[in-house]
Image (tube, rainbow over all chains, first blue to last red; front, side, top):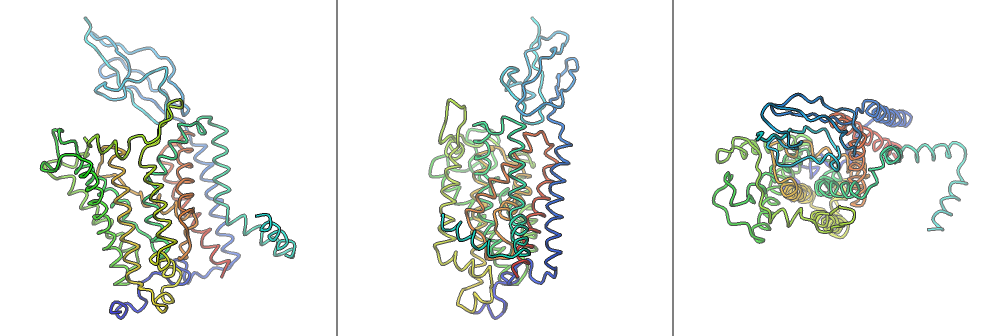
Length: 127
Length: 359
């Protein structure tokens, strides 16, 4: 085969016995040590992120109304605790929405927190 | 089955003290990742009741199905002792192409203005187009690896960057200015991400692409185990020189493995376009890392020539479960990247230890 003349190993750097670890010089004891150390590191990582876990934060964008403080440290699947609605001169609050254009409403009773979210206040001109 | 355990027990009784110690350390270390993940999953299930709910399980299955095609593609490259770093970007490019080709024709802002109306035939044609584009990039990867003896890490790193350049240019077409490509046709969404199975009482549904992913697993199992190409791939992976001597066309096999991988990224990108309905230039970033991690967890070894489809499926699911669990425990998504890196590192050092212990 013509291609094999140019690349005598045929297939380039692939398929050496031992593959990616071809030529690794490590005693069996050190290999064990490496394995234990890497698993230990991974366990430590898991513990560290669990300790750092601070739940989910819901921030409120009042869209011109009075500020509403964010709620943090919410568990996965939690519903939002009842809060005072924001106020805005000349407008009536219509509820919280998932999007700034107020197309998708957030149902306080049924919708649950599964990630960090920002909710947007909906306003209607006061009659 | 019973006889197998009896034989194993007899083998174990025949070992002396030092060998018995070896037996336990080997067993413990070879399965350390699975043990760790099992502990973590049990911990999550205890802490958060939602983890085992029907909606959470369907979520895991759905996410796993979306990342399966890529892992199946990259698996072949790892069997050859290589890898493919271009996967994520090829995925991004094909997703963007599928979304652009299948935009709702009635939408105001279109990437391509003169395309056929959305129909079943056109939807299938786009699947073919994006798989061909993926395959073409894979062909380039495979050609450079096989012909010029360049390491896949380098070749695919280069194609990763080139593909990203193409992605950025693609997002500028028709005055799009780099914005997301959205307004994907509903008919396309229905065919790919529409519900295949719906359990109304539990309020969960399984989309069609889960079914497609399982069909793909079947096809890939057949390719790996029952075709000459599959057998050649394992032969080249375990020892290319020996494979060549016994008449395997190493060049053709290497090119084909990479081409097949590219076509599978194309498939994954196509599904993503329907799944998300809005594709950005960042879509697919680092997706190859997930796929590589899933393969290594699933026992596809960088030693080459070892691995099976079942292992990859398990790897994909384990990784998905871990990330859904991390999310449920309220862990910042930024930290999840650190965990992913840790998993790849640990999986590779265990893989290497296994190889050195056998030597």
